[in-house]
Figure 1 (cartoon, rainbow, N blue to C red):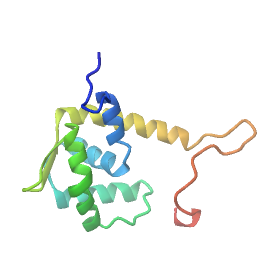
Figure 2: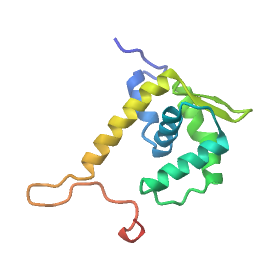
Figure 3: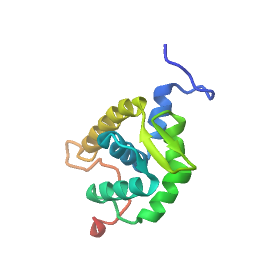
Length: 137
């Protein structure tokens, strides 16, 4: 039997909900893969570098990413037990649950890549519309 959160969602549904954001997935990848504690500034730089390598639109500066990580993304990851985040010291590290969450991120990445290549038998593209014009890719 799966455990339920206060709003009735299962742990799995809560994890999936939190991991819908690509910044959170990138942060969790960096934290788990490095197995180190990061300062907020270090994590923001590493996440930005990772997202730029993976065809992000590149609009996040390290400073703006640090702000969104601090106020939005790290608290969400911490609330689900994927990371430990000390807001006053601004240091973060992955938890054991975060390592399990990293496996889920890998599966989400695999599904996302598969969906990007979908087409109907008559050749029509079924991939989701891009948020960005082709000229910025």
